[in-house]
Length: 199
Image (cartoon, rainbow, N blue to C red):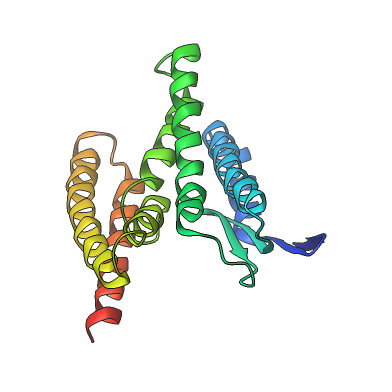
């Protein structure tokens, strides 16, 4: 599905609708619904700060894996503001998750989903909000080269730790595949990034 809101191209992928329909006939609808709400809040926070800082959004896509925002490149935003844009959404998810835990208790699916999305996205990894925010903070004082080296180190460290946690969770807690899939994605991202930088 594709439509426009003012000058912004909005696209909703077929995979999003397919998983939504599948969840309706399974026991995972509440998890999917809460994940969708948390992801939507996440992207809306990014959008609010992008617009607040005077930039424009040319495209917003909603897929199986969440939202994707593409900005109009004619507006350059200063590094401190870029860092705020990056960190604002995962921090919002974490705050919502913590508040929901206090209100609904540790069994709250909404709290767990928000905490997972927030903590995962704030990790200092290349393509995550935490990685982008860290890059903008470092380049306020140092060169792009220094920022990239530091981000390589943090990304590899986070990936190794996350992979060990994923295997542990997979073995000990109901064969959870999600973390394993995410760790494979992170490993492949590192390989591609290192190849682009050094070959």
